[in-house]
Length: 339
Ligand SMILES: [Fe+2]
Image (tube, rainbow, N blue to C red; front, side, top):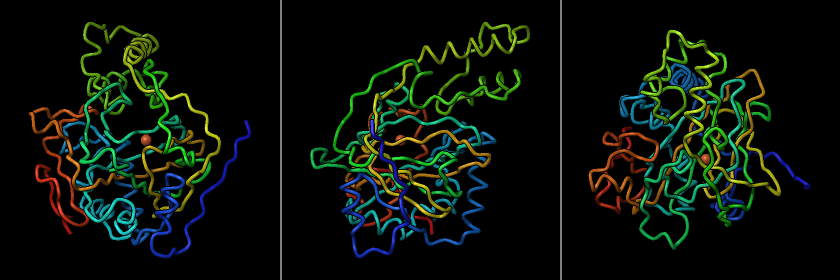
């Protein structure tokens, strides 16, 4: 296959909503600069990397998670709700907008690739075998109701695991299948470089693999007597027993979103995307946030007392942030930006 690849250019200042045209054509647009002091970007990068490396527990979710630290860190909230982002989203989704989710995407040196995948807009946890919709759009037949903003907190290079897109792929829903989690697009080998004791600790604290509950996996195992090798075999067997999402997709062309820290891209999750392994000796820390039309019902399970979402997180402490316009779905839990 003749694979065409290119690196995205930093956008020139564009007239009005030229970028919206590019978004609808390619499924993504950018990179664009944020309006922020580079020192603040560096500070945020350090804090987000520390949350990931230190496996910090989120006060919102009561466990280690990379999700929604903007509900904890007001500087992160200010970054994600700033005008430079919102003004780029309005021409695409309209003026009534909720920012409902964020996530840290931290690739340490040597971290694995994330395989090609797309998401059709329900965010139900299908990537780890779940089926609990996080969004219920008001008019699903009218096109997309959500998009993702991906922000580089470190410089993103060809070597350190850049986000990649298959341009134009947002219009085709590619079938996917459930495979053993160890073969899925999202499995990041969790044992590398860890001593047996640390593997045990992380397993019991559900800190081995993001969003996967592993507490109890060592029940009945002779932890003191087992070798590291047999322990890893046992745990890999448990991961293999879980089902996760795999999409067999070969892109016709690839766009690579290299960019300096403090820049962002916007994309539809329907656009096939992924990222190669971090082959460098430098971390690549990024955050994303998801913005939906404010007539979308966020976490519909809340209305029927079902609080655990598709990523196995209890969303009782979650709130969306109205970043533009009016709150059109009155049943949402939302607030205005703090600053
Ligand atoms: Fe994704």
